[in-house]
Image (cartoon, rainbow over all chains, first blue to last red; front, side, top):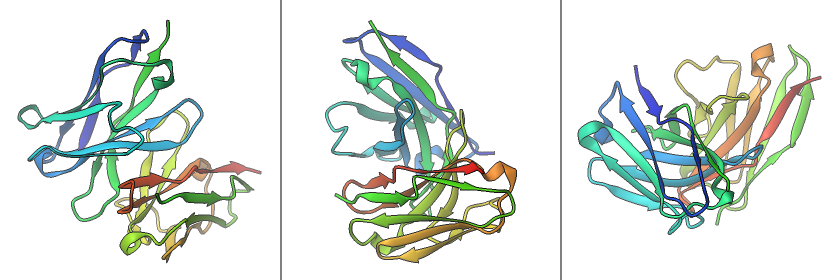
Amino acid sequence: DVQLVQSGAEVTKPGESLKISCKGSGYSFKNYWIGWVRQMPGRGLEWMAIIYPGDSDIRYSPSFQGQVTISADKSISTAYLQWSSLKASDTAMYYCARRGQLWHAFDFWGQGTLVTVSS
Amino acid sequence: EVVLTQSPGTLSLSPGERATLSCRASQSVTSSFLAWYQQKPGQAPRLLIYDASSRATGIPDRFSGSGSGTDFTLTISRLEPEDFAVYYCQQYGSSPLYTFGQGTKLEIK
């Protein structure tokens, strides 16, 4: 079965750095795009970035370009999302999701990682 | 930038009724690359429909999608209790690469 398992909840302070992860299993990780989606408390879904682990091709949403870094290590089937200096406004649930090969929708999702940034 | 506008914001219906949710794009969606997701409280979104009208694996046939260009519709033919949730449309292809609508909350009347 296809699974995306994300790292656990994080509580951090403004200005700190953070890297969260998403490990894929049950499929050929390197051959599927993996994206990250933000959901702020009580709000809708926002696409942030997407990566193709096979060759590390990356696309960012203009809204998140320069704010986060997406990466992947295909040898351990894991994608990452990182911040160099968190802000209180980064407090949100972050989901990773796999894009289908034959369609451009996200067909499998991780369980989400809650990031709380508070002084 | 493509903006997706979903209507209504909240839809109040009873089990057994038919639900019609709308998603309108500010410009034509590339090749009908339009998807619909369902999200229940405390859960990740679930893919229902891709390419405007194709049901994802395991999705009941009471869910159907239609539309092209700038106007798309998700229809739930007969509501089951587990269908009450928030629904999002999403497009692929125009800048930004992916865009979500703001969501429609389907609540029990």
